[in-house]
Image 1 (tube, rainbow, N blue to C red):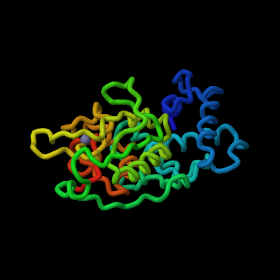
Image 2 (image 1 turned 45 degrees about the vertical axis):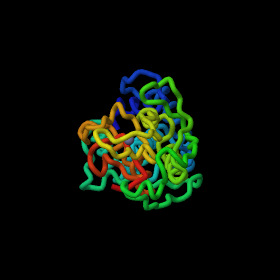
Image 3 (image 1 turned 60 degrees about the vertical axis):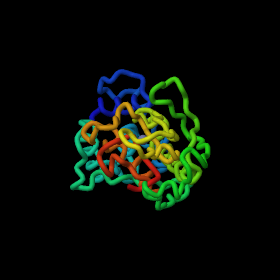
Image 4 (image 1 turned 135 degrees about the vertical axis):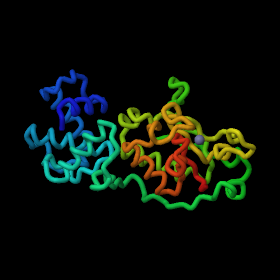
Length: 274
Ligand SMILES: [Zn+2]
């Protein structure tokens, strides 16, 4: 991996405060060790006895894994899988579409004993939501977030919990846990997944007479500023490859992304089918 790219990634993860000069010295190595330490359970055991060159490769593998690139075992060795990952990461930082033709970007599987398996749920269709969920604004529960979010239009306002329909609560709680487990807090911030754009909001759909899915507290918006309503996948940040795991956690539990389904409103996820 290019040394500048490695330093930039370590900086983005909040581990490196030095200059981006492409010289991997003691400060860069300290950041790499901190990254390995933080992900100790994912790194092949015995890494503390490895030499600096191997620890550096292991750090690069973790950097690539953290953006959703499949790197195989984090072992500090450059095999075919790691070489493919380097190529995928180069494309990633250049903002290019993933080369899926070679299966470069297979998503890492999450094995975390803190979270049970996803529960595949068949949510009601949009025209059945009143029958399934009841009247708008009713039957709400409070979801405690496992990481702190901030109100998207007033970043000084912390969000630690929000109101959501009681039937969607447990599923959303599992998914937020997985998001934290997969990305970690620093990456969540960097990707703006901590920008809360609202959940329960009793209102009519824009330009229509029907209620928005937000009216039942069964839709959540993320990072509205960088995923505006009419933006398609060429502009919306949430359409980028680093969010594939985020979307997978929702869709595994049956939630519907309007971005994925219709290429609009990428900020939005809902517990109702079209
Ligand atoms: Zn929405």
